[in-house]
Amino acid sequence: MKKFYIETYGCQMNVYDSQQVETILENLGMEKTDDYRQADLILVNTCAVREHAEQRVRGRLGLFKAWKKQNSNIKVGLLGCMGQRLKDKLLEQEPVLDFVAGPDTYRKLPIILDKIQHGERVAEVKLDKNELYDEILPHRDETSRISGFVTIIRGCDNMCAFCVVPFTRGRERSRPPQSILKEIEQMLEQGYKEVTLLGQNVDKYHYENTDFAKLLEMVARLDPNLRVRFVTSYPQHMKNEVLEVMAKYDNIAKNIHLPVQSGSNRILELMRRGYTREWYLDRIKAIRQIVPETAIGTDIIAGFCSETEEDHQQTLDLMEQVKFDYAYMFKYSERPNTYAARNYKDDVPEEVKIRRLNEIIELQNRHSYESNKRDVGKTFKVLVEKTSRRSDRQLMGRNSQGKVIVFEADKSLIGQYVDVEVYDFTQATLLGRLKK
Ligand code: 5AD
Ligand code: SF4
Image 1 (cartoon, rainbow, N blue to C red):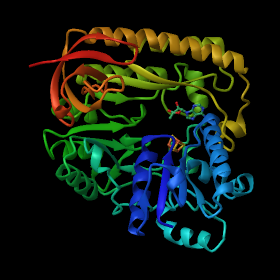
Image 2 (cartoon, protein in one colour; image 1 turned 60 degrees about the vertical axis):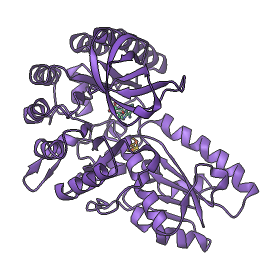
Image 3 (cartoon, rainbow, N blue to C red; image 1 turned 120 degrees about the vertical axis):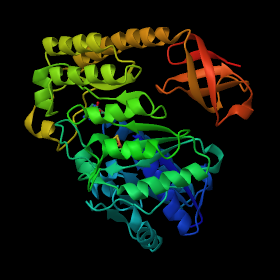
């Protein structure tokens, strides 16, 4: 097998994992292609967080099945969370698959590929609480060395009632700070201007006596011109120390993603989130006090088990109090074997979930609009990422708050920091002018 193609779904952790898989395959002498019709090996790195995510993957597998019918020599493998969730059942359900490999098994890919070449079908799904892929540097595309990810903590021990992640990604484990720093130093040498530290819960990072606040400070000190981002924060564990480090360093992006999930204490308890609405609002207050210019984003689930109209109103009310800059909003999707699936009834009717979700989205759209409107007239330091989708003469980049800004300027500025003044905005982007 010479050429592989890889398609990635789900979160940024998956994007990073896929890059590590690329490295592993390249070490076998294989080469990546962006066209699956050129590939000897087709890989799909999957997500299991909601049923919809799995359905999309099933659709893609249908397409690859048709392709494999005409090209019987190719192989197809499924990686990631959906593979970990369904294991060998997936081999039964999807005859197109030659193998399934869970998130902690990528080191075994050479052996797996050898087996499937000999006609075996393989499900490799053991979780390994020590696997950090610590020395496997992800493949970083030479054409876009501007902003990159680095995983600092894998797995999740939170056990929120609705969530499949603890089952698909296993126990929490932190990477040693030395290897994180080494990886980022190498990125700096390659010309990177921005790094995003990744974890399901970055606030739980700890390695010997280094906690997340210390790690963040160490990364920020590597280079004042390296912008440092991180996701995802967890309300129960986010400490003021982290906010103080953010306030101290200009190059730490002023953006916190702090999923609330619900504004109702009764639902939060059923979700086993480990905090109350009052605790969450106190964390928001701390962010606004210590790092006032920070953009705050969240995740919200509509229609969790037994959610009443009153609970839903509490969510809308919390949104009114916080006025999030942005939010990712979902309908509750029951995931097999989670605490909620085993203990509660998914009893909010579909049409009620949809209506509540729409109310949440509508309110968020108003808040995002207000947030963007407040930015008109301000000047931001923008890291230019690429030309905009609309036109070659327009560039797009992000400010420290993570907002996308589009402005007219020459392509030669890609990969640089520039000052841009915002004069208007659309639903999802700020429109700006380059400051001379
Ligand atoms: N149903 C709907 N949304 C979910 N999320 C996680 N599990 C589920 C589920 N079963 C959402 C949460 C989480 C985000 C990554 O996905 O809001 O923060
Ligand atoms: Fe999806 Fe969660 Fe797995 Fe990421 S960790 S791929 S969001 S299920």
